[in-house]
Image (cartoon, rainbow, N blue to C red; front, side):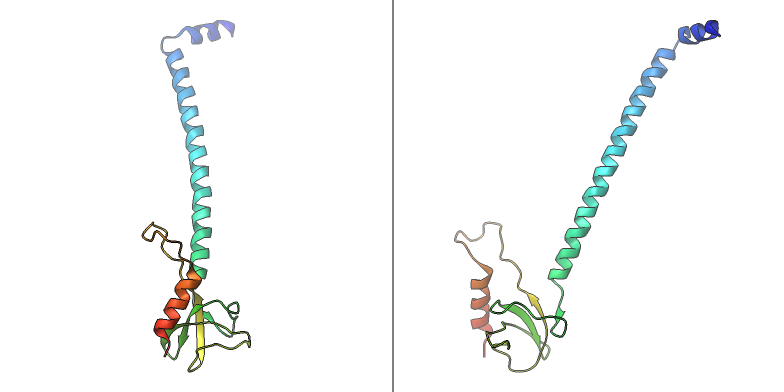
Length: 132
């Protein structure tokens, strides 16, 4: 048996095969690691997509109302306007029944504006433009 082992070790090309096995094993391990990282990244993207979809979803007023004093987009009789819930718990500018609402989008962050711009200020501006 030892003679067979010695002969096997001494066969031409065995060393190259062993090196190739090491390379392939290393590549397999790297592929597994990259696949695991890709799956983790996809899970993060799916979670972010779910969050973004929930932020862009029209919320029925029967399900819940927005925080008081925060401007949101509202659907009133088929029109989209901005409004907010006042301290009295009612929509401030509603001319008719509000059926759905959703948060205002965030302002651009690509540096288009050099001054700080808050969503609340934008909402007040929009509200003044769309008010009666």
